[in-house]
Image (cartoon, one colour):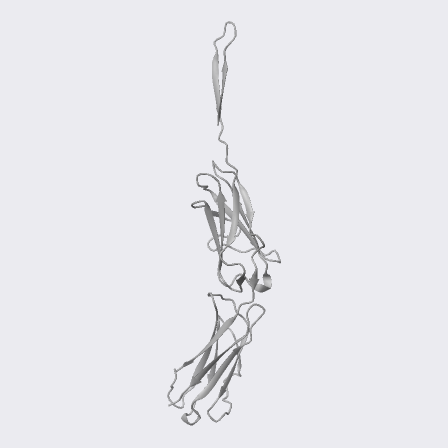
Length: 239
């Protein structure tokens, strides 16, 4: 907005004109939404801050995401406390898979828009916070060598635990049970309980004889505070 002032002058002095120009910034509002709320443990979630203003608004948004223990979380590609550029009037913050867990729920999400030459700053929060629940899992068993395997050689069985939606972060153990066609238990090298690492657990069995084929294999993932238990089964033929 521009303000002009004219002085008609006084006796013996010429008049003068002056002006003052000042940009008035439009009030804005910031709304925060989630790509999945509630979500499940380990699931990647994207938060979007939408700024209502004029232009559309430019500048940056600073996301603040904390769990119930007030622990902060990063936006992927942006360190904690850094701002995310605004494009087309919005900014997004993606929390990577394996970060948001049910044991730390709920998560408070706030987006602070810093403004630009035409738009005033504003702050918004995710209504009801981000709620994360315990995730269901699926366990799949595979073998190496694959079935059917040659006789009288060791076999490695691997249990892979997965979560719908691409979640990650599972911990805990897998218990393997292997029996031959006669119902007898087959020994596992190092015992039947194996730690889960990067969603996998493996066990090795001594050389398998054709006389015991087929061999029934089960793998039970015991779950943890954020992920439910699940069981996978497999049949290994030896020929």
